[in-house]
Image (cartoon, rainbow, N blue to C red; front, top):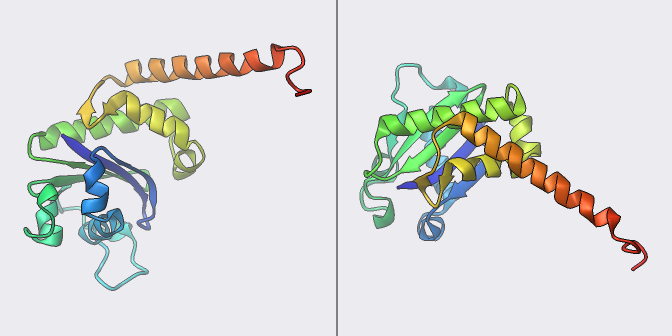
Length: 183
């Protein structure tokens, strides 16, 4: 099961955080999790000015959560791993348990980034910040409740376009109601 998705910029600031297990937020404070991921991705301990860009190229994309906090930190995170990938100075992190395949998570991350690229035409950090509703919609079309729903980026793009059309059509109904502004 996918436990969460985090999108961070190269300085480690979270731009999107989505957890799929309610107890995970309270069992392990997400700020501690992000701090641990920042350390694992290459930021030196105690060096706040370092960026995630300093991450060595020969390190693995997979980080065991136990290696960040120790095996006795939180029983809910036992056996979980984080898949970290850098695309266009944006770090995508998928947190998942041992029932998921690591390479499948890399592939799913690639589908997510391809879909973002198709929807925003060359996605950047500002697209994620200012269009967070659309990013959440895209993520909901791919992953829902920690389970993978769709792995085809073209199908996801079509669904997101359909949702956008429905939103525009629903907004056009309101001005056509006579006298709605006078109330």
